[in-house]
Length: 177
Length: 410
Image 1: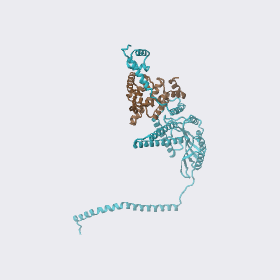
Image 2: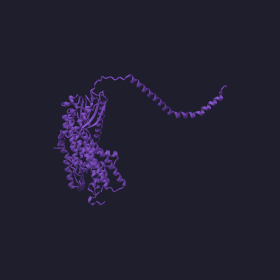
Image 3: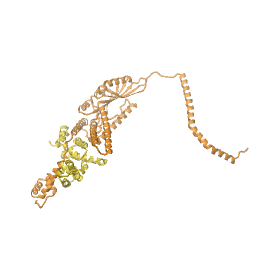
Image 4: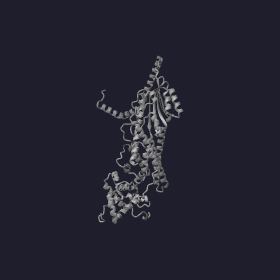
């Protein structure tokens, strides 16, 4: 059964359908926030809020687009709101990529990669991460970010070339810190 | 496409991402077979994507599952309730999550509290015997004890705000909610006319005590022979409310009765989630403090933060206990009025008594006047003497000058 079918069944009141959807996407949504926020607790809260928003929007759900696009759009909006809130508070940044910007070259693979990604332009970074980690198509990314398809292509290409430069030399050959 | 005619680099990337049409894919594949430069570019792009896969994320926490499933149960409960109550009506926007939901719930509770207190004030100030115009919309009102006691026919559903989500249910519907896993705080109000307030008070205290409840507030007003009024609030175990109300109704003639319920599931879930987060934050801070070897000011900063988080936790724990009490103990507001019996005795004081009272009043007035006069003199005396002393010399000089200009005729 497709995601869209499950949503329609959930709309009729089947909790099993929602549990199936949650099982399919729980790790993906968790990863989406976890890679973008340093605060683990906040990532968990936003993951929960994403699924709660799906529940609340189920009554008005129409399968015009793929469910995963709909789901990531909710997650993206929540993340954008979170970033706005952090900026307005001028608090210590919990944005993972911002915090990790000065950690390029860290021997830990996660920190090394996230540090390199953090050095990308913000818009390029969003596109790259949606493609590489959420496996979104160019069209889905264009829909999520409200950008023309060709802009998505060109920025994704630019981000990958820049990342190729940043990720050299290979982790094994990097000097010790 | 020849080796000399390189495709756009972005097309090579799109080929690797599977974003080209079948024809486009065939072209790029054929070109890559013959073009070393483009093959190298494709290799680099593949390598970047491969390297990025090394950034792994730990598995989603089990608490996320629990929280989402809890939210789902709450949502389904609301949905079934909505269908039950609003079938055929326009469905409004569901509540939003996070801060807006909290703000809305707080505002709704505040509004409910204001309405409730207003209703009580009106009641206590004598607007009894009539339906309370400002009664909270949470309440399901029935006129007369018989209708309230039967409670078989569901009353018309009052308007309900989205965020407030306060339920007004018949007994059967309330039971469904209990079995549905919702957390319900129940309230009831009863207004009776009784023969004797003292007997009613004793009966209420006896009943509440025997059902492991307690009296939260009690107030008796009026004096015999006038009719007296007893206003009391009692808390009883939620599952005992029906039994206690049945006994209370038998104490007199029911003038007015209201029943209501409030769904506090969302409040409870939200409070638990915030409490869990605060506890985790505290644990992290304690761990940071244990490992901290930096400046004293940093250590103090962490300690201050721990104290702040601890304070929040204790506040939330207090709120949790209050919420639990509201769920476990139903609130019953009672108002007993004594039946008024017209008195036939007319008290008229005797003439000697009147004369004595007049004399006493006159003496009291004289004493009060004397004391008042003395007090006034004491208050203005020093100031008057001071002014007189200050003006005495200039007045005397003026007087003498006047005598020089207009000498007295001898």
